[in-house]
Length: 278
Image 1: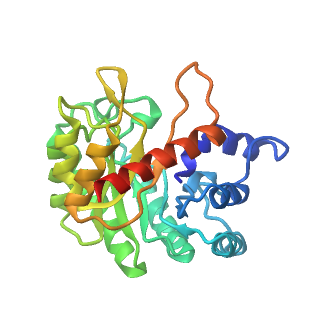
Image 2 (image 1 turned 90 degrees about the vertical axis):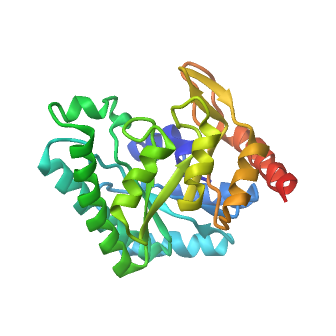
């Protein structure tokens, strides 16, 4: 389970502990519904972007163990496309700090971004006057520094394609190959390749995957098209990937969304596709 599925409820709890759901309580949900692991995204930990206390980390880790859950990874928000050097440096420091948190949790991967889609901006908005090649060079330097730090703690830096700077498989591989580190790989977001054939892009980057985002739908020309889970799982098997497959459901704009009922159903669909692809 990717904790983002409970984004609103987790944020509600952060504002008022009588509302929503806590990250700790999410562990119980995962156990009751037969998940193998959880991805506790960093921004749901108390005090983010500051790192949580060791007491909180250890309690979370022990509780996950007691529920029989692995910790598949964690993630942070950052922006390496901006022309603001200070903001990029802040992102590097943030990732380095959370690499240490990931190591304490026993999470093998930390998920990071390159682009700015989550802020409602395109990379050209925050890097006016610079070419794509120049912006990628900033990213390569930043990710290389983060990957070197990850190597010290045994944590892989996974770059997620997010439909902005990284839209195609070719763009993803251009970046990761330029970083050229065993400690930097791809978080394959199966829902946000912006191309005529997203499955071709997925197949292209799958051999470089260090983790995944399995989503119910793919964004195509502004529309949500249901993911062909059988096709996706065949691609994943063919790539040789053997790690966790985090799933993520997202609240549709203006529509009712209940992760408590939707997630068990989607988990079954994914598990059925895994079995059929064997």
